[in-house]
Image 1: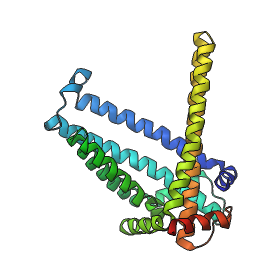
Image 2: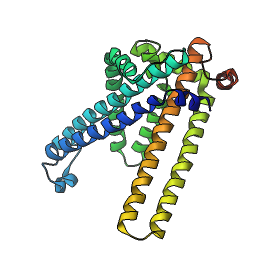
Image 3: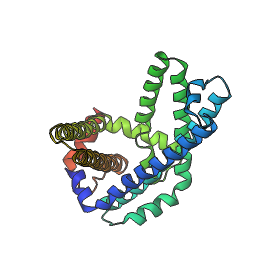
Image 4: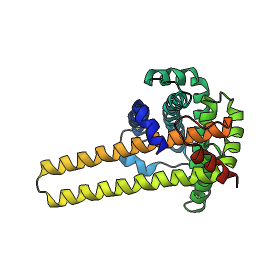
Length: 274
């Protein structure tokens, strides 16, 4: 509820996940095009010929690394801008979208380094997953989950706490120890809620398509479902970012962010410590 109130005060927060999604799609298209011509030689028939042990496999990993780097950078850059605006709201200031972008630009070196590390971890995990159909994928999934948990607060620490890359890992691990239980529970709760809403939207859309005849109405229904799902994704992403930063701020300063009830944040951190 408190995260929703913050989002209503600064609706432009949602611009960050919107633009991030658009930029991420463009990155994917560019890298897929590079992969198609460089690795596949412009023919989909070559896809089954790619061997990770041969040169094509090396080229695939190089392109995949470049994609990871670009994708992580885009996501992290716009997340940083969102954190800056949310943090300003917590401290009684009112920043706009351009302020968030400018703030992210001031931290662009650290954001790039963070993205480089994340891309490296990502490519290593992908390499492990490719080594074995079962064991490799399980090990990769477990290591990936551990990495995501330990670095959960790293980006807020870099941008808001103005820490170094090394210190951001240490701070994030410390924050997780304080907020572990509630952070996971609330994020799962938000994810479950929006997951249910997405399933309901898809169900209603499919029902409408089955009942209503005609190509035009089918296209309209599909378009509406896509817009609905994208809207839920944007709102969910924004709410998760707001609450994550609220937990980060309290764990870092001991001060309950403006707009949040002390009971919610304090109980969250206390439940994590227990």
